[in-house]
Image (tube, rainbow, N blue to C red; front, side, top):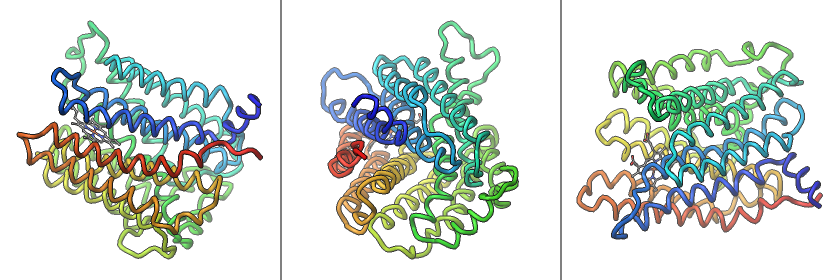
Length: 395
Ligand code: HEM
């Protein structure tokens, strides 16, 4: 029984990572609720940020990549040592976040990223097929995350005088890489291949497959427009930090908008009509609009940026939903409004509420708590439907 369980997780690592990710998301957001009303609470800012970016999103990313990469490259499935170390590192992040050990959490994130990069490189070398060309963004995203958490780790080591070689701008850039750039790059890279497939734009998918399913070096399989978009995307972070915040963000918003229109066709009704697809388009719009708002109104700070973060959370939940159904009950549930419509509505309301706190400085923390509750309702509806469907099936 034990070995068949291990074999099933090796084949479908998402069955382990998605539930753990869901628990991390709930724990990371729920912390704002008691904080608003307790008399002597612990401020959950650091705990929340670490848990959301390094445990919630990371688990969904690890689960997705460890499941998808072997299939795309037609190589071996995840080894127990690979997913085992991956899941231990996620659990260790939770403990490090709880004890406020940010450098330890950075070290663990770095370890996670090295594991996943090694996982990809091993399969990439043995590949019988190229992965989709847009996965260039996945590789760059993981590298950005590794650089960001590496710099944060070094600067956070006690007694280390970061001023001697790192000024605060480089640290800001590292934070931007590890908390946000990595996830955005992953959404663009995975989304450019996955979203058109889910939405039913079969001609886009066929053109992509024709380009990457060929015995050519991977670089040749990358679409020309993404080869141009990648350096612009990278430069935008440096411009944001070192030249002008709004300019850097606007350049990046242009790249995101380009991918959203060209590959996700957010401006068109998708050929496949389903509640899943409406929800996916809503999450895409959440990210596009959030990027532009944070470019045009940089003074909204993290309050504005959370529109993008909540968009990421919706994408993670929806991609996980698709993977779960595709490897289980089948996709017929996607045509039903439940749970897609309420999950989307609650995440949207949470996004509005989370950004809205910017205008309620007097009641900042209670409003954070209301936004958190809205997100949690959405997450629980998702969990009530998908968690039991994630259980490994007997074959
Ligand atoms: C509605 C629920 C949410 C609330 C009330 C909330 C609240 C907050 C607050 C107040 C901060 C600032 C903490 C500080 O600097 O002390 C923060 C930071 C952060 N949040 Fe959230 N958040 C929510 C949802 C999310 C979600 C769903 C994600 C990720 C998918 C996320 C990711 C982050 C990250 C990465 C940071 C740190 C960003 C940085 O410092 O650069 N949050 N959140």
